[in-house]
Image 1 (cartoon, rainbow, N blue to C red):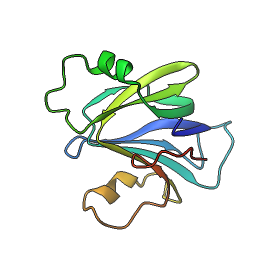
Image 2: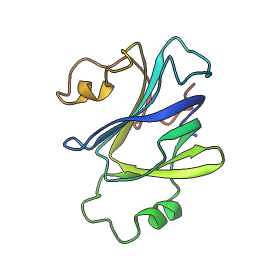
Image 3: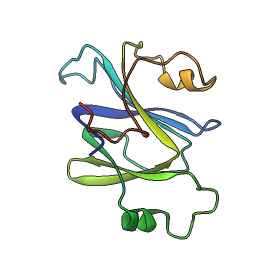
Image 4: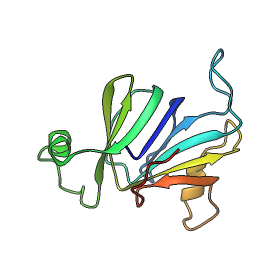
Length: 141
């Protein structure tokens, strides 16, 4: 497992022109859920395919096994060079994102401020403390 959290994550923002998606666990989630000091943002860059729900109650992120990747993308590899198949696990179910990279940040951004804005002019300021990214292989907190 590359990253896991028991927090509630939601599909928060998507930028079609830059092929980016943001899944956020807000510091102040839905009513009745525990409050946390900071947001956790899971950002995928170079997104080519999505098969995800709008909410995740607990989330595990990993890279798909080769046979699982083949099942997800099948013969649709044209234009997907340099992309990886990532699995998102939540409540015993598996979901998929095909993307070039991912990053997980912890931040203090306002509820309505998207961390995707930080990736339109790369390199630029980062949207918080980097926890783990696609170039790392260690277990994150």
